[in-house]
Amino acid sequence: MKRYGYSIFFFATVLSHTFAQSVARVESLQIYSEALNQEREFLVYTPVGYDERVHEYFNVVYVFDSQNREFFDFVSSIIPFLTDADPDRAYLVVGITSPYNEALDYSRNNDLLPVLQTETSLARYAPYFGNAPNFLRYVSMELMPHIEANYRTRGGNMAVGHSLSASFILYSLLQSPNLFQSYVAVSPNFSYDEQWLANELITYDYSKIQQETYLYLSHADEGIDYWKEWKPAREKVYDFFREAESRDRLSVTIASYPDKNHLSTFPTSAESALSEYFENYYEAQEGVLSEEGYEVSIRVKVPDKNDTIYLTGNQENLGNWNPAALKMEKITDFEREITLTLKSLAQFKFTRGSWESQAEVKGSFGTVKVKPERQRALLFEIESYYDRY
Image (cartoon, rainbow, N blue to C red; front, side, top):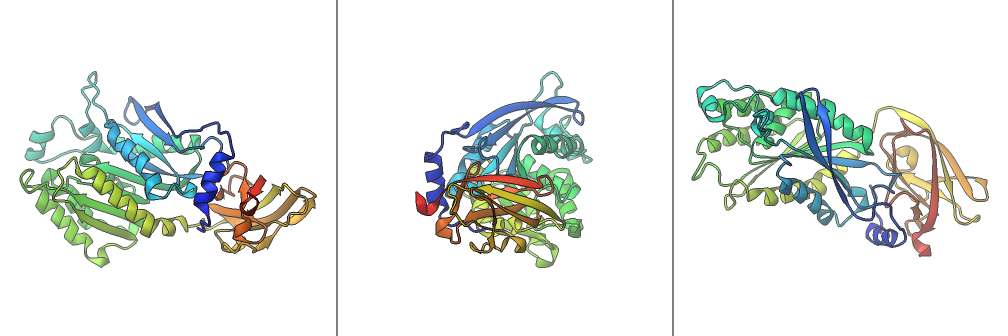
């Protein structure tokens, strides 16, 4: 995606509007889960101006173990710093909680662990284990559809987990390999149940992954002075992923922080993972388009009747980011129109023929984003241009 002048544009846009949502917002919400037979709380972070940015869609980061609010808050806070507050890289962040329910005597480990078989694991974790399949159904079939139905989501999903929730997101990769496009697994436990998760990852058929996927694995000082069983289990997994032929569409990064402990490694690992993702994988994942095209009519209101308007965007039918690619037809003095066949997710900008004359569009901080399978007649309004500020 082309991001010409976005920092200046972003702050100019912020100063030129009175927003319905002038600050980033965190909401605590609940839905009833049929899969878990429980009411479950979750958190949703929406970025600055989300309510007004009606012509934009957002990728989603799902942060597990968010009953510990610091995990959720760290991820939602650090993304703007890592992206220079690029409006095109603003994210929704959803905090998935696994609190202890005293009435049900139900704990986080019930959510995160599958059925255990070995005496050692039963002695360590019983009776709090075994509900991971239902928890995955809650996440994939209840919570994520709820987010997609109630928020403007783009389809790019990242999972972030620490410790057993890191183990769980790897379990989800095995069970539903295309649920997430990126995984940040900080200090996962590979050793439980005689290295069951490690063995499953090694024998898995990675051809089931249908899209380019990013996996970040890290550990701290586990296995040195405590939890000695962790080190041989993770080394087995690491050795496997270091072999190129095992990856297929999966790009794997392995990081070590022996100067950190099990908890303190999270900020360092999460920052490292997200930095690498934005630097090396974001553009590739964003470039994936739907196979099918959809005919849409795009009409835009202009501030000056003499304006000649061009359209350009993220696919061949949008001119592949050539700012003078597609001249729009003059319909009335203050309206321009064009009809195109577009793939999803379509991303585009209006210009007067150059990036210096890029348009500021009402309802968008940055790039306009549309799902043509849902919107066949689109109407926009240009408020100003970069070179007319």
